[in-house]
Structure formats: structure tokens, C-alpha cells
Length: 318
Picture 1 (cartoon, rainbow, N blue to C red):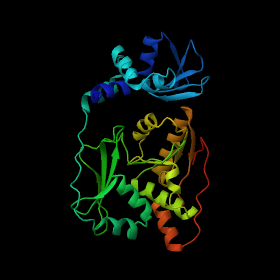
Picture 2: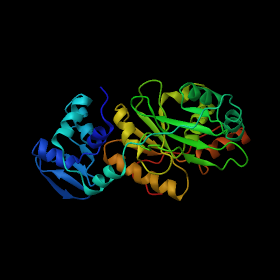
Picture 3: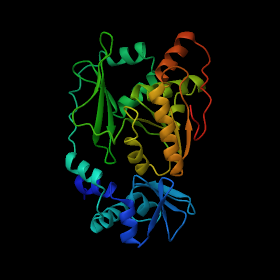
Picture 4: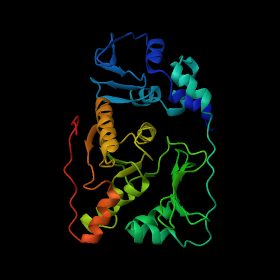
């Protein structure tokens, strides 16, 4: 039976401190930007009251559902019932957000009968590998609408479209935007064909596809790019990351591939530190140019052997 969206949202955003205090009787003391459990010194909850890490167990996550499914091995549906049953009082900010953001209904643009612009734009202007394009079309993550725009689609855990962004293909191709009702918690995600511990993270779908195309260029293997996950944030906020990690518990390593500009570098460093504190292995792998599509176009233009920039390890200031 489908879980009601409002109930699921309440469960995902439940205050972790309130849950531990009521469900286990734990008490916490605040120090150094986090709350430390008095009964279990290695259990820490971050200031957002959602991110947690249990150092002695070597496990962490985002929200109460993560704790119940990862630590107590509780089935997901049962965990939702436990969390919503105790009804922990959310922080005022999250309470306001619940009231202000009812479940969104995504409005996808009508699909074109014939693909006239998509291939020309992605291959000729963006130099995306045709293998990547065709695979994403087959996965119903990519299509052309009746106005000739390219549509990038993100899905939820039930394989229902929940997010879509548009890119113009005509003229200077500057048009871009999200479709009405898009939920950025569910980003454009190029999942691996087999379980993978690594997730590459980008600002845009085009950059994720460019990075995949460069994998093909570097290895000569048309399927190499499908060995790891790639996620587009549609910006520089990490809204989509916790929801992806909740659905892909095999992921242990996050590689931040945001734009090589001030906003991208600052966001990448901030997120790398945040998720490293949660127990993930994090790296920065910034493009050599402004973004990975610029790198791909430079590679195609110069026809040189592609080499990625050096990885910058955790907690490095740029």
C-alpha cells in the first residue's frame, strides 16, 4: 500500500534529537556544532537535528528513518509508522516548511512526435556521446518536447517522475528552467547498472552527461560511465543528496564535481565537509575549465588525451 506523501514527509523530516529522547530516553549535550549523546559518547547529531553519525558503529545518515533502517534493521514501512506514531515536535522552521510546501504535482511538457532538435543540440553543440544520449532516452530520463526543448527527468523511489528541467535548443540556446511542480529532492540521476559505492555530484544534467562522455573518451569503453552513479543538483544546494542516499545505501563515497567558479568551489567544499562529518568518504574533482561540458568541448576541439584534474581530499580550502 502506498504511503501518504504527507506522512512520508513528516517521517523524513522528524527531529532526530526528539526521537532519540522519546524512543530511547537518550539525553544530549551541545558542543562544537553538534549534540553528543550522554549515554553513548560516540553518537552525535548535527545542529540541523537531522544528520547523525554513530562513530563506534561506523554508521551515519540523514533523519530518523535512516537510523531505524540502518542501525535497528527495521523495514522501511515499519520505520515510517514508528516515527509518525511518536509524533516528535519538529523545529519551527521545518514546521513552517511542512505547512508551506504541500506535495507537488509535476507537469511534464508534451513529448514531440519526432525528435528534430535534441540530437543536434546535445551532439553538435554540447558534444555529448551518442551512447549516453540513447541510454538516457531508453530510460525515459531524456526527451524532446513539442517546442523543441530538451527535457531532463528525475524519478522517485516508485519510478514516478518528480522533477524535470528544460534546456532550449534553438538560437543561442540560453533558455533553461524547471518544470512546474518540480521537486528538487528528486534530481536528475544517472544510476549505475550494478551496485556502486561511488556517487558523482554535479550542478546540472548537462555536466553529468559530459562527465559520462569523458569517461568514454578516457577509457574507450562505451559502458564505462555506467559503473558509478551521477546526480545533478540543479544548482549548488544539496537538497537531492539525502534523498538519493536514503535510496542507495550502498554509496560510501561522494565525489563533488561542481562548477570551477567561486559559487561552485565554495558549495563543493561546504558539502564535502558536511558529508565527511556524516561518515562518507568525500572528494572534490573540479573540472579544468568552468564546468565539465566546457572540458568536454575542449577535449573534442583539441582532440587530446583527456586527463581529469587531481582529486582534492577532504576538508581542503580552495
